Length: 170
Image (tube, rainbow, N blue to C red):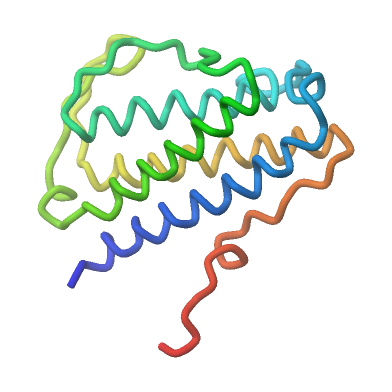
């Protein structure tokens, strides 16, 4: 049976998929001009922040797979078209759930060496980096949530316990 941390990460992967689905449904409402409008946020707009989350996911999943990751600007726009970005998000969420389903205690006990986008070398525990993978998305979804309030569109409820329905039989 999978350990508690492994089960937790699998739950976060499922939550991530469902939260992204809700977020993208809401982000589709205001239209391209509103999504791309400059706002006071790290990545400048809803669209820029959605792309940044994808950049981060690509980097971390590649690192977890033992791949060397070429330096990508963290503010790169991978997908200019929202529908294309949304389809890519769905594929990436499937990839993240597959990654989480393959986690085990042994892998989480390792350390990963990598070079960040500023060229600094690091060596960190995998369990902390996997937690960061999910926390990173949550952090930036919160920023998008705030930017959506500036569009007049009501942001979606993204609380973990409102999206993941606990099994009441336990």
